[in-house]
Image (cartoon, rainbow, N blue to C red; front, side):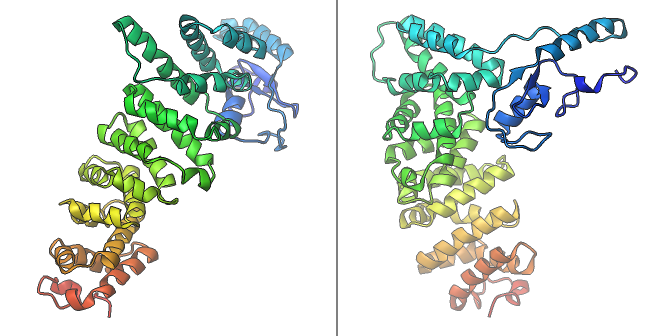
Length: 412
């Protein structure tokens, strides 16, 4: 390829490679379909990469003339090792999608429809956007909302068929990478869709539970605070169970991200604490295989939940609670250290019984906070550590358990 003179108009401005399926934007610039779809839909960009103009209409028009020139050029250079570019399959039309949904009346037709929709969505991002604008989201959401986990199965075959539609519907919904408009529509269904996802997490397969969490995370990212505070306690119970069951790394990560975004709002931190999130998070911290980002999110959720009395009580009940939080200071990242110190500050402010203060001293928590003041670990972290130490200086500073090399750094 280095020795072949490739016409510049055959090169995609994004990938800088020969185009296989040239399409033209409303700005008049032609790109390879795969590259521009990634730019617009996966990257969620709204401007033309070349002209920087805002794209009002994301419709991609196939550039048939350029494609034919490309194919002719490939044939002429076949002897030099250039492979012929096949004629791309045309994108699905809205009429085809609508007919597919209308024909899906019986359970068997519904399963066949889901299989077809899955294949169509897998082809390209243009198909996904066409599906989204043709009523597919509503069709899939209705399958999720009609899911009945208590239905009595009369045979193994029936059981398989009854479970499969919900698995497929959730899988397709997630794969569509829904726009903000569609996600807001799902959030705005009077909480019915969220209640349905909660039922799926309660009784669905591992696959369905994972997709339910991934969808909830996407919905929470665009939701209004007033919608977030209305999440029911049962949802938190199921989220904690997903973390406990460790269905998959992706599901656990999505659950932590969801808890990070929803716990600060309203009574959500109390709901999370009452659902048993604290002991599960501590057990995850005790797992030495936890990645840096996962550890940061766990501590962020713990910090939020320790903002209520129920959360602080659960932390102190766990035999390893204070010890593991303190251990993560200076060992993971500045973010993790700050969150851990914030948790300790909450305990020092609101749970400072003589027993707790003695435990913090014996576990080396006080010594670790003094060490924070000596090292470069961020001004916010140092400020919070200093505040904890000052709160109980009378108890800790002159204690025989205090390491002599750290006494000098104890704040006055």
